[in-house]
Image (cartoon, rainbow, N blue to C red):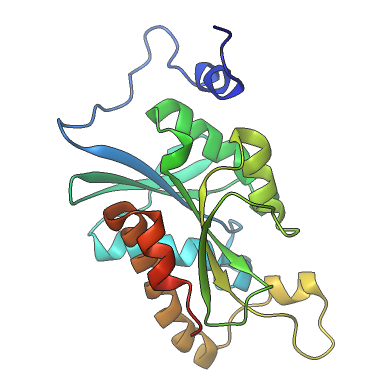
Length: 217
């Protein structure tokens, strides 16, 4: 049987001879990759486009993990919960090239596409709303597009609403603008809820997570 495109992709990231193999999960543990999208650099640290970063950072803190290890142009940390290993990933390739890092992580750690969860900001949702889904179009989100082009579309997405630009701001200025101090305090609640949605996908399955979190705020 010919090797699938995804299988060939995994081969690209197998360790070279003499390189350390990836750590092996303990018996009964299942590894997931949770990738939060954003841009590296202090100037973007609290921007709306870095919502995905902020969600995985809060997930890491909740599990006593740090997103500090480097691999495949990304930062990642590991947390264990309920028989699952969470690979919490923050690609450092800039938003529009997120697929490069995510593809490397999936291939190296041998994580199938169905156990990839991508957390990202979504202008088409009002601020404070979440949507959980698998697959579908990218709605113009170039980070999601990069991942879909690199590994395929059938991954789970946790979409965190940031709304459309206020006033005369264009889309780019809006997503790259930082959350205001008061706005960020309010946003932290939705960041935590997004983290809970990630946990629900892993612990309860996609259908139950969608039923619970695809509600109006």
